[in-house]
Structure formats: structure tokens, C-alpha cells
Length: 582
Image (tube, rainbow, N blue to C red):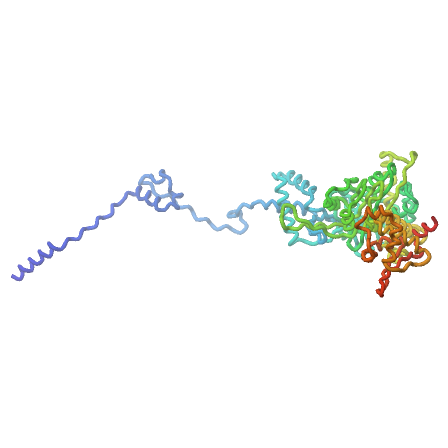
């Protein structure tokens, strides 16, 4: 019974409990299908076996043989070496620039330069158009396919590298200092790098061994080669003197000015004196500039230029040639006069960089300058004090010379003339520290230079200084003609102060001045004329520097109950002596 019951219970349990289903087994795929499924699951490896042709291989074919392992290469063996790539384009340009020299940054002008050596170091600006053109030609001859844009981009990269990591250099243009300040070197601008060295009163030509780095600007041309024979007596200046159709004292002043330019570098410590050539039609102003000054002071590809309409273009002219010559100037505005004064003493011009909103562009501005015109265009006293005025006389018919004749004449004498100018500069440098000017004017260095040239030329002491003082006085007389207050004070001094100084108040002085100045001049310059004593007191010393050059001294006396002024004439003044004789 128990056994029967147990069997019954088992049967009931089996009937009530469902049977577990057997999981179907995974159907085994063929090798070809499995390979395709693997390729679909791993698409990044499909590059190895991704083509149907490779997946449809016959079953009997085995897998591809594995690649042999790469053997380690020996040191120095060509196996395993990567192919050397060409250097970047800017490195090619830099290597081409540094052939026979090095790159440097000018500390004064913040300009990138390439300095050529061996021999005397000669520098050229990297960012000039001539340099870019030369690089284009050299790279094209080397088989490089280049464009001007690529060269400009490479030069910009090179300039930035040199500015931050390159060498620093102090360069001079045309005239430079040697090891000491009394030694000067003049770049003759020849391909061999020859320099004329002025030292100890002598001139020698050096082809190497000098340390002064000389800058070659794009518009420069070569000087004539000086004669080999020394000329201590300065006889070689005689052919040049015959070409100057000016009063005798102005001839010597002009020679001294030419020697001054050839021996004084562009240095903020030394102000440059500008030359103003005046003369009527037929006096040969332009011809003298193009043939004489361009040959012996600054040979250039540009002979003369017109006054630029844009005042900022003066900096461009100064960066192209050493001595800009401005031809046929009729008048100069105050803005141009102020800019010329800055070009004399040296300074910087700040303006907004092109195509930018806030980046500054700084131009260093100092140069020697020549202006010519029929009438004197310099009317501002501040500029007049920085100029030397030479009045050329009209040439007679028998003294006129054609351009061919002038060229032949100068070619015959150029060596001796240039040697004599260098000898004059060297001898004057040798004695300039031992002389003391008798009439020191505003351009003190030039006054001292004239005293040295007097000694070297064998002239009487004070001859050139008196001539220069008269030259300045004549210029000031013409400049104060447009200024009624200065003109009235000058005439007042000549009328009331000959015997003794005049002392009084501005209230007493104003009616006396109004008697000397016409109502027409006062109306024409209404805002410049003082209309009450207080205005006269404020403007009394406004023209003191101009009148001082004319021999008139203006003073304010110490303050008392009444504020008084004093007007007097300076003793032994050349211009006043001429007026007294007249």
C-alpha cells in the first residue's frame, strides 16, 4: 500500500509539475559565414580582411603567413632611418641671409639688419623692398618655387626671432664714431666695404679691421674714390670754390658746412644744421644740388625731390637717403617748420600702425637737409636758428656750363676735391676741442666747428663766426617781418637804445610801439598784437631769442611796485655795426 501510494504521489507530482524545456543549441555557422560576421563586428580591423574576395576564400586555403618581425637596426646603418624632410621655408631664407654674415637688431631704430663680413661690417635692412627682390631672385635660381607673399611671411618670422633672441648692434649711416669720439669713419659705399678713417688730423682708407657697423640704405650710391696723395694745404678745394657763385664769406661757410656733415654722425647729442640755398632764376641752385652736393656729400639714386604733401612722408624720404634735397620751396607752414626742427635735433614720430586700431608705429627721425628756393621759405625763428643760408648769384653767360661739361669737370677733379674735403674735416676734428667760439650761437657745435675751420683754413680769428652771425641776423630780419610785435621792438631798440638802455613799464612802452607800427599791420595781425599793457607784459619775451640774434636784448627787471622791462643793444655785434655804417 505504501509503495502504491508513493507511486501515485510521484505520478501526480510529475503530472502537475511542468517539464523544463531543453534550450536549443546554437547552430554552428560555416567558416565563411563566421568570418563575415567577425568582420561586421570589428569594423576597425576590416582593413586587414574586408573584401568579399578575401572572405570567400576556399576552405582548404590556410590563413596568410604572418609578417616577419622587424629586426633592430644597427647604429649608423641606413635601415630604419626616416627620410630627412626639407627645412622650413623661413629657415632657408634665414640661411640665405646669413651667408657671409649674421642677423642683428639695431638698438636705436629697432630695425632688423643683415651684417656682411669679413672685411668692414656693412649692414642692410632686412625689411626693404630691395632685399625682398634679391631674395626672390636667389631662391628662384636655386630652383625654389616661391612667391613674394611667402618671402614677406618668412621675413616677418625672421624679424620677430631676431628682435627677441638675436644679437644687438649699434649701426651708423654714412658717418660713424670709431673707438673714441674724435675718430670718425665715412662709408664710401663701395662693394669692397672701404671706409675713410679720420683720425689725428689725417685721412686713411681702410678695407678691413674697423669695428663700426655702417648701414646701407636702399637709395644710396657710392662716393668718388679719394685721391691717394695727402693734401694738408687743402689745395684740392680750389676747383670746388670756382663752382660756388656766392659771396666770399658764404663760400667758406659752405665748405665748412660740407666738412661738418661729412664728420658728424646722426646723433641726438649733435644737432644737424640745414642748408638753405637762395637765388633767382639762372643762379644754378638745382644744378649745384644735383651735381656738387649729391656727389661729395650724399651720392644717391634720387637727385632732388619736391616738398611732400603729406608731412609723414618726410620720414620715408629720410629712411631712403641720407640727405634729402627739397627743390623749389616757396613757403613752409608751421607744421613743416616744427617737423624740420625735429629732424635737426632728432626724435621719434608716433602714429597708428597701418590696418590696426591701437598698435603704435614709431619712426626715428633725424637727418641733414637741403632746401632751395627763390625767396626764403623759412619764416619761423626756431627753424631759422638751425639753418645756414647761402645766396647764389646769377651766372653770367660766360660762366654757364652744360650738364655734360659739368660732369666732365667734376669727373676730372672729383678725387682731389673729395680728398681735400676729408682733409678739412680731419684737421678740424683734431683741433675742435682746443678752440673756444667767440660768438656762440644756438647751434653751439657748429659755432665751435667754424672756429676750428678758421684755424685750419688760415683765416682770421672770428671771420667765419662773424659771417655766420650776420647770416643768422639776416634770416631773423626776414622772419620777423611777418611778426609786428617783434618788428616793432627791433625798430624801437634801434631808435631809442643806441646811447643807453631803455627802462620803463609796459604801459609806457605800448604807445611808443604803436607809433612805429602802422594800423594796417596791426589790423592784418590783429590776434598777434597786444592791445593792452597786460597783454604786452605776457608777450614781451616771446621773441627774445630772435631779437637776441639781431643784437637786441629784452629783460624783465626784478619785481617792485611797478613791473619794469629793459631793452638794450648788445655791444660789438656785427649786424648792428653794419647798420651803423649804413
